Length: 281
Image 1 (cartoon, rainbow, N blue to C red):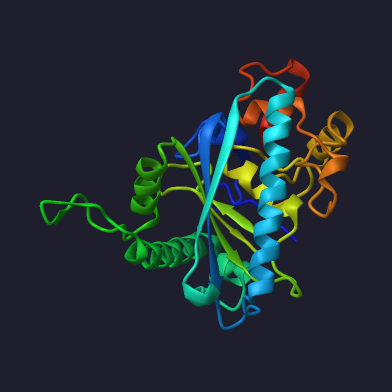
Image 2: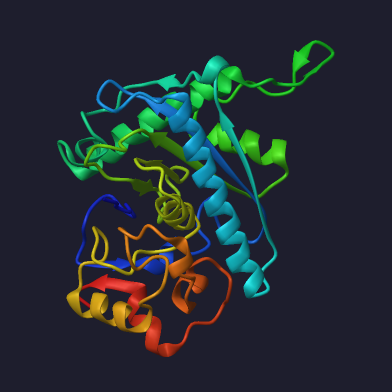
């Protein structure tokens, strides 16, 4: 089960174009970094070495698929990957604000849920930052160690010489019913990041793309108009953003609408413009 969070809560109209070329993850071109962190909580399954290694395998499958999709339409793209992991596959321990990702988001309400998840994400980023080697000059660190998501991403941009950094936090909900989320994709109040509950290559691919502006084409939190859901299904039945339960990446591709949202093209056919919004009109 998955969810993309684009704003503080439902509104009469959602303008999805705000996610395009926005925040740290702008257009998906040239060299970008996917940086991921494994997190243990008291309510999710513990990360084992096997779980971590199979998730990393899925990340590499997703990376290759996205790069191949870009290559087919002439977009230069290289996705660098790196991750935080302690000695002997130790993870970061930080309980979610509530028992699950879904409850953390929705209780007591969406706005407070987002605030709590952003603070939770900052704590994780600070823990990662404390493990980083910061180069010293004349015995003085050039920069202080990152203590927030924003500062961690700024450090990673410099370290890997990239503009876009997709920050993804993995919790192990493999045998549980929960959601994945992408936060701050339509605003610049905080940097965007994703909390991913499952290790399927399709899920990882979808949430990576969401950080760079892609939008669900199926019924979801932000896309609720039955008319526009029907249009999206008619226009793009085989788009990666069409099916949240898909398990095989080879059965889908990146259609014109998703390509536009990713910045792979600057034009969008008039027929697809209705999909840029949801709600009353």
